[in-house]
Length: 489
View 1: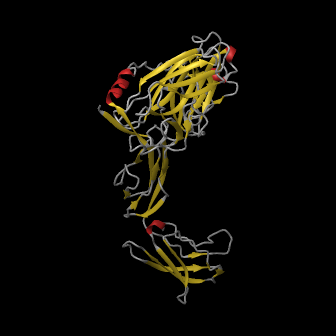
View 2 (view 1 turned 30 degrees about the vertical axis):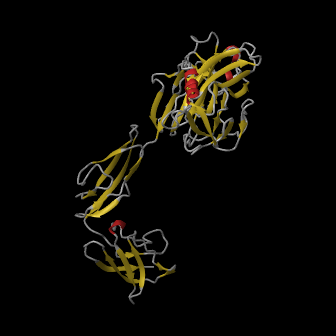
View 3 (view 1 turned 45 degrees about the vertical axis):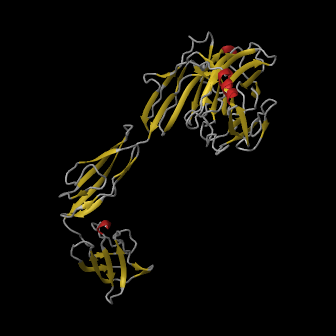
């Protein structure tokens, strides 16, 4: 009789071909579509993500825990990744469904049965909840059996509150997580809830899966909040000093609604109750500092107002406070008439656009480093606007002089008047080298590409009253300058 040999686990399974056909024929082909919540959801009351547990959720009898990332038939593990299992007949899975945690990996037992069983407490009584879980068929072999899971929510005495069947979970060309779920109502007495997951298909030839992020979230009517006059999002610039009025009426969903406004500074990853914000309307604080500020209102019936697991949440209201562009037009400059100057401005921010005004005598008014050749003194303004519409500007003064005036004397006697020898129009960016010698040819003062500022000393020692010789050398083709300066004490 024809047989088929398939590698599975650490061994090989030999089965008659007719039995393989029977198995496929007998597997149910129906798929009940998930009934996930269509209203507003609350935060997860339960979130089993396996990130902090290697063996915290042991399956029922028939399964054993292993620390191998390629568990054999009837075994499971909790891992952050798995690769090259059983001659690459399993997908290489590099992460859980969120991309940064662990997941449960199950190699099905030979007989159909429960593979996950746990109790859930802390739910709100007489409340609708959405149950959801993420599952992946890890098998790549196209002739293998596909997982076929039934989720059951029941009380401890076995009373079934709700049941949902996934149907055959198909193989995929690459690792692919898919969410399955439904909603159910808790009993009036808030009994302990039992979550049961059953794999209806036999193992031995496939039927292997990964499980992640099992959540229970309260589900209720749609709660819509808004920013008065703005919908659900506002974009403003820093230093706007603006405040807004939020509203979130839930009277159509609850007879006696209980409100609580919340804020988040991490884009909704966590929420904090705002003290005293317990009415359907809330006025925000004044916004001036950059950041993303999220708000929402959580609502439940008045009788459950003190139970967080009963709350459902509205849509998010977002205030985005954008930074103004950083604009630096550069230092004020002095140039000699007929010379050009190269600007060294900078603009950063959210995709800013910018321009100089006036554009007169500029090589390009739309770049940060144009060349300027002004014929008279001008103040140039660099305007910038971010992609969010935030604006900022900065000025640079270009003083045009006929030539460089070198003072012929100074009096370093600490009377606060003319105590230093300066050359006022010698712009440091000219890169000029200035040297001063005494009458014996000894170098007394030297600077290059810097502001000229001599206090009449050398190495801290005051120099005597005398006539000193200076020389100015330019790095461009401008003629050198020579002369004398008198130090008077």
